[in-house]
Length: 266
Image 1 (cartoon, one colour):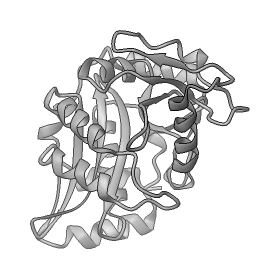
Image 2 (cartoon, helix red, strand yellow):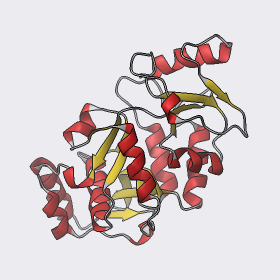
Image 3 (cartoon, helix red, strand yellow):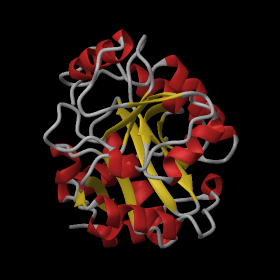
């Protein structure tokens, strides 16, 4: 869905209009409905599961553990989604194209170029919130989301990848991690291929720690070009439930082995 479509849907939700199919409204203590109740592909909002609730730490951890994520715009109720099929990047299928490898080599030769994890989560998510999006007016990373994910980071469940040049943060991404279940959220860049460099760094560390899949939520041409593809939701849920049982990497101490990074070149 586009942000415009989400806005129209939210107006209907807030007006109390009857929706077909039914959309469950969450009170603070209401658990999520089964993801099998998410709207199907023949509706105006495939994957939509519920509205309302809050963005508390407990709610967000519960959501991700069930393959659910929030997506809404400023002034709208929280909308919760569980698309089927699910867009995922199986880490061994990541495409490190030759053009990206060339860019990496260029920046690697620059002494002031650095890659890091969890050095400045706050700055990464704030930059993601401010980054312009094609075909979108505004951002879904509203102030309430920024605040909630900063709290998620403090609790050890949200992390960031940073790309630095001359001491300045020029690109990055943030993600949620429960055990070894990794959920990609958003990226930004101010340099050529910066967000792809951040993603390739995340994939590299995931491969090192036997993380087999990164959730990408919804299908986009950009993600598909990097090797992401659709997976049946039931298979996706099986993967994340299994991966949640494993111990999460200590993201703050991760480094990039440039020689090993070349091995994932496609």
